[in-house]
Length: 339
Ligand code: KG4
Ligand code: ZN
Image 1 (cartoon, helix red, strand yellow):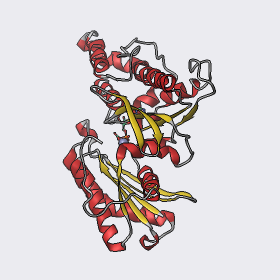
Image 2 (cartoon, helix red, strand yellow):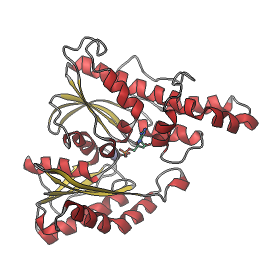
Image 3 (cartoon, helix red, strand yellow):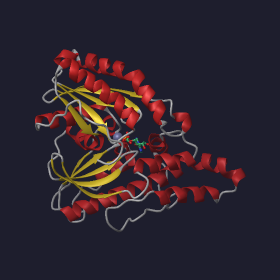
Image 4 (tube, helix red, strand yellow):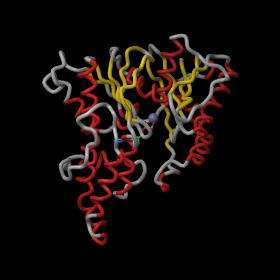
């Protein structure tokens, strides 16, 4: 029974995973304090993690119906993320490790997003993984467990950031991604043709041009009329922005599928909860649409609760790492960037 602890950004989360019985609990405390600042304030995030961590872990144990003495290992996200935030989860995990005398393993937050797909299904290697979160946008070829080749990543903003920043221009609260997803339902994705950077080449992404294009589009409306224009067309604007972001993500992932010849795609990270992205991937499964792939593509997308930050993904990845013979001790260090 593995306890997973996640505190890399603005979610304090803990989960208990059993390799045979599955995920026994997954408790997530989301921090509201950042909303009025329009983004995560690192110091406030650390303090909120500190306030919540012991309750969240206790609740995860009680929902799983176990005591901490029944745990056989502890997994904790040790980066990338906000240094102060990571240290709260790591100190807590190290304390438990010392107290209980059970193995501790540090889990890379981005790897955990990928292996969240193993909570409720079993993707076959090799596969192409698209990680789309608030801080990262990466395409990888995954040959086996923890055997990753980076195919391409964003040169500037991440996909989640593109949602959050364009949403902010529309006056939406942080994080705007989930709100824009809801507002886009049934709206016109062709309302404005926003730029899709590097659509026809390679695996690199760029979303900063989209942000500028949305800004210019709004500035073209006389200032006095702008609030009314946004209000009247909010859903269509969100749909058009979502269309630009998701088209690029799907096109590049399908290019990687074609070039590598794999038949499985795995989506990961908060933006993979996006309904337009999910349905575009489901539609691109058929051989006709996946440009000559030999058989129907297998698309794995975690349930939305396992897409955004959660302790469950840390627990499942940690469990797989421990099984592969990997563990850390008190010397485990947090890292803010890189991988
Ligand atoms: O993976 P995640 O929870 O945290 C990071 O590791 O960054 O991703 C958070 C990002 C935010 O930018 C948020 O706006 C976006 O994921 N997001 C969404 C949706 N749900 C979360 N973006 C679009 N549609 C959604 N449904
Ligand atoms: Zn994340």
